[in-house]
Image 1 (cartoon, rainbow, N blue to C red):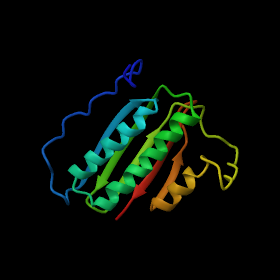
Image 2 (cartoon, rainbow, N blue to C red):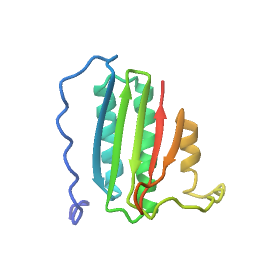
Image 3 (tube, rainbow, N blue to C red):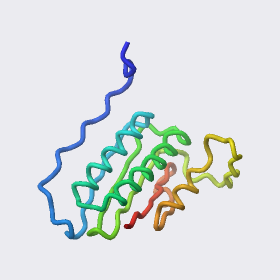
Image 4 (cartoon, rainbow, N blue to C red):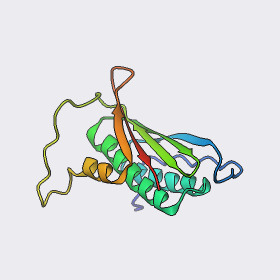
Amino acid sequence: MSPLHGTTPLPRPRPLPAPVGAHAGRRGERFELPALAASVAAARSRVALRAGHWGLPETVCDTAQLVVSELFTNAILHTDSDVVHCRLEATGLLRLRIEVADEGPGLDKRTPDAASADAEHGRGLLLLDALAARWGVIGPDRATGCTVWAEIRP
């Protein structure tokens, strides 16, 4: 039996528009994927494809893949979302902003516990803090959900 038996197929990426100059102004894209573990890899691939198409440096592309993996994983593991939304915005070669929005219960007011040395989870926001030039959380504009954003720079 196929390892994908019984899973929901992921949407195919939209075709890329004609390339723009590497130093063009703002470029952006929005996409959404089902809140499934397989969507983490799909989001990572989508970000790599788009960042490469926009001519962003390889270091930005690699960092963006790690960041989107972490943000998608958090949205899937820590909320009851059906769909996870992502927005990418590049400004020249200077900045890539990633926003990941969930459909969860809103912001958690608890303070996260420190992960033990042998814990498999609990270091995601420390990783995000180390990788991103800046990051933060946008509160929900409705009763549920929130958006976590990160800026990646060369």
